[in-house]
Amino acid sequence: MVRRTTRTWLRGICACLIAIAVNVIGTLIGSRLGDIFYFDTIGTMIIAAVSGYFPGILVALATNLLTTIIVPSRAYYAIVNVLIAVVTTYFYKKEYLRHMLTTVCYVLIISCLGGVISNLIEWGISGRLSMVDFETTLVHNIPDKLICAAIAYIVVHLMPRSMRDVLHNVGWLQNPVSERALMEIKQDRTRKMSIRTKIVIAISVACISIAFVIIFISVAVFAEIISVEADVNSATAIQGFQREFIVRVISMCLGFLVLILAAGIWFAKYHIIYPLNTIVYRANRFDFSDEQSRMRNVEKIRDIGIHTGDEIENLYFSFLQSIEETMVNFTYMNQRTEELDKFQSGLIMVLADLVENRDSSSGDHVRKTATYVAIAMYKMRQMGFYTEQLTDKFIADVIKSAPLHDIGKIQIPDAILRKPGKLTDEEFEIMKQHTTFGAAVIQQALDTLPYSDYLVEARNLTAHHHEKWNGKGYPDGLSGEDIPLSARVMAVADVFDALVSKRCYKEPYSFEDAMEIIRKDAGTHFDPKVAEAFIAASDEVRKASEQFMDMNYTTKDIIR
Image (cartoon, rainbow, N blue to C red):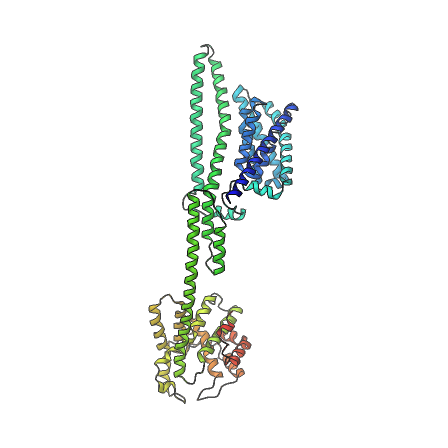
């Protein structure tokens, strides 16, 4: 990683040197043509477009210093080339240079910038401001900048994509982040002020303060020297020299001021801002939903590859180590949770079997009703019924708790529970209490495990699976959607299994007759939507009914 960064930096430096050489050669050609054209910004435009603000400004300023040897007065126009680098980077990043209209605007903007600033500097030095001079400068600038922009555009688009990527990624001290991810990072809000804003403010204040002090001291020293050496009668000349000196100092300082500001922001961005923001970006979007997603997200954090060589790098590796250890513990806890879940499911079936073994007439009733409940709920969701309630978790909780719906029968006396004939009215009243007995048992478990969702549904369907849609059921006489959905589904499954199963006091109904009873009782005994879905799933219900004697056939066979 470090070697790759070093190679990238070396390539970036070489590209900047080549760009400076192109600018200098262009200046020499322009001088041979009598300064009709300057050709001194071609390399600046190329680097600014491909590598960004700081490299572009650096090339512009270095070019200006070197071309001062050829044309000494150019030392005072550094800010012009620096602003051209800034504008070029902005237009290229926004992809404005892909359209003819915005390209023309770009050429006009940099031409006018050059014309206005050049004439302001001339006015500051000579004390004269001429509209004719401005128009002449603009006439020279527009074709010059148009030619430079055209050459730069051609070079950038002929440049291999791999080379453009290398130059674009100069400065990264981690694996580069995609433009899309950078946009999402920028949209993440901080509570008050971002580190980027604080750094920009700090660097700006420092640069402006230093520049102001330098200019103030330079002017004071210059004024003192001139006042000592100059003739007393040359006050006007002294003022002219002082004004010219101030303009020259300010024009030279402005270019360096922008360079220092860009350099500070550049290094802060790649050494602090991007590494920290990338860590936060990956942490905020960590997906804990399943094992595969967790491992994929850990790999994404590992791929950040921060190598700033400072406290940021230490923070990154500490964070990565913590995440990896957390995932190991998370996986271990999930395995233990799955084992506990299996234990709970097994315990539920043991409890259900205890009830079933006391009630000799029920034969696999709890397993069959759980299967019918699963079939009905999946069909309801498929048909668009109660979709907000029928989430994967809700369905899983109801299927898991369905075998407990008759758990209250454990408190019903054997004489009633195992009676071979029809119950008397008094016995039936006692039998009806199995709903409240069961709800009380489940509530005791809930008091111990208050956040167990499946126990909540177990209590609901245990207490209310004998309620009727028209309010004539028991134990509370609830009606319509006041009856919990899990209990309304169990009501259909419970009655259907009772109809098609043989009892000591009756023969089993045929599948068709049982379905007809479910259809007829829809809207009175049963929720019409639950009954409709159950009937619509008759093929699956029939299959489950016929094959349930196969020990390999369980509710897992129909869980989606």
